[in-house]
Amino acid sequence: MAMENWLKGLIAAACIVVIGAGAYKAWSHYNDWRLSSVIAERQSTIDRRERCAAYKDNSRPFQNESEGLAKLKKSICADEYPDLY
Image 1 (cartoon, one colour):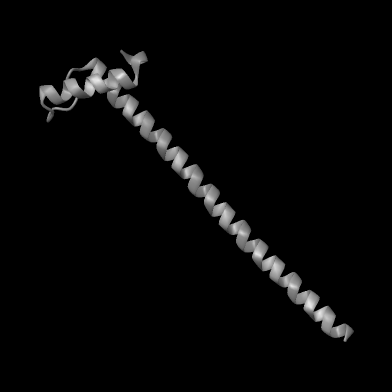
Image 2 (cartoon, one colour):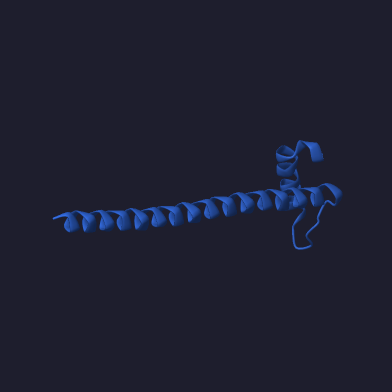
């Protein structure tokens, strides 16, 4: 009887360890995903700001854009980043 309880306790402890390890791994993956999404968002903001700075310095920074499209993008950039304009 005592051996049976000891074995049940050992199995319960092993289950707790396995569940804990799975939870740790899931939390770690979630944190990695969250961090990578924050980094991607910041990089996107930096890229967008750099493009807007190019519109400030040059009326048509990209050769294949029409004049109207360049003006529209410059207007949007001026609204989004007033400190650049």
